[in-house]
Image 1 (cartoon, rainbow, N blue to C red):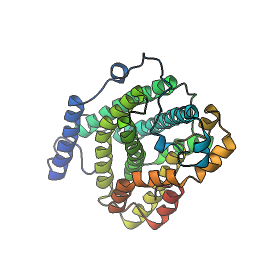
Image 2: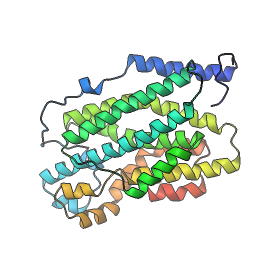
Image 3: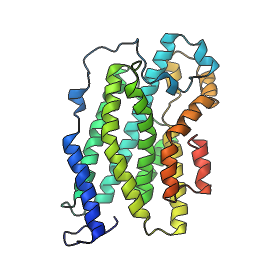
Image 4: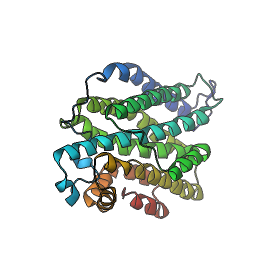
Length: 305
């Protein structure tokens, strides 16, 4: 962390950090949700609704999308919503392990320590919420490809400092922009809108914490460390974003998988949506010195730049 976390440390920097963590804790006490109570899990799925805003579908804007029936379009967006949710669960499990490792054996009276545990509790609830949501959307367990799983295992074990928190920020910010659109869209099935609203509200605090921790860890970082960590974060971003839309969603929607994958990869509309969603994130990474020339390759491959 930026300073010692012992009670005797009364430096202005430590005080500012404690006050920031205190604010997050108070916000969590005032505005948090229990998904088991807030989400309508009992009403049967209404297939007249989409699972995401259609404009966020990987095939929206392609010739294949125009050929699909409205029923196929809605089924595809529901399966894509489930795929994004399953990827969210996978990364939230990585996130929880990194935070636990970071705060292992540190001062439990420190508000930052208590906030870290609060964030982990939030992520546990979110993962259960996403899991139940995917099941209600009648989706299978969409898992990342084996290589992504093993890279994630390596990342959660070795990533430290700004690399861990900046990667957390990347995953949360990309999902945040999408979900803000989905939660306001009346074409999206109501229970998914509620899920998105809960996640957006609670993740806003997580993103603030990740930004502050990233900046704090980089305060005394030299040029070489920034260069290395920038590549680590960019690589993690590429793996996360490329895992969000599992190609099996096309099969579940009754589509020609090979054609769907081919048209999705060439879909400039979807690439544009991703780039626009990451404008604020890229600005932050650039200001933190984590948007280097070497890292650009990964972000462009993930259509984030």
